[in-house]
Image (cartoon, rainbow, N blue to C red; front, side, top):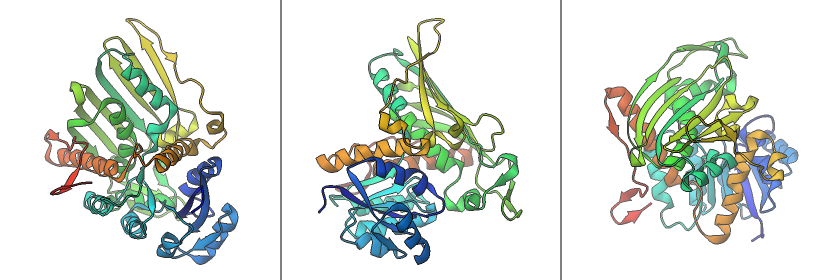
Length: 382
């Protein structure tokens, strides 16, 4: 086996896509990894991707990629409905697996995959990379050191530009269908609530509302009008560990200044995580973040972000948090520990999103799955 972890990416389109924008720049920047194989649905595009990205092998058969002896880590970057099948293939091949978030289309699919990973001896990673922002990590350190005193509340706002002007690109059309599990709640909800829980602890109970405020949208390339069935607005009121009050507003189609802001208030000070620059309209997971802090009554915000690694600043913005996740994965692969978001983490988030849906459907306040140890079958901890 090579000293470097050899990576095969399923969904490595040579023309556009998250793999080319985020994963491949991240892998190129890290000496611990080597891009060995790429896979797409068509042989011609796979061969083109191999040439463009410098991979030794091209595949149009996902199973062949996963089973290749020169692939140690299989990365899944395709549309969400295909995740479960492809992840299952990679698990069966005995490989480490990194799947983009959302982990699967449904919670039931996520439960099945976690069961498959029990005692596998492999690392199974979900791409909830926002927690690896240096601003989030620094906020976590300051909170543990008592910078804000006792945390009292958190206010979360996240607005994407997706759907602005009533139009979306053709590749994104599938996300407005609720059955595909790739809408605002799943993508923005998961990517934003994960760092919130990473900082504050699990949300134990909540009440929520979901709404569709833009019931139709136009596909930009074809001018076809399609119906939107996936919610584009979320309002949430919840309680995290220690009684911390959490309020959340997320929505799509923000005309001006799409952004994310997570503001944490305490008895002695405040912290705020703020998306920075034009990438902010895409969501917290693909944005540069600044950390602001203020202490004492009448204090003013100070920038606490601090300098990051020079190599990270040289990467495209969308790739920086992904590179940080890969860097920590390299440590875990070397030590055998599991410190990065696992399939269990993904299952926990799917269950949290289920609680949001249940509250919105019933109009009631609900308890969530806040137990970090997820027991699936008697005598087996996933």
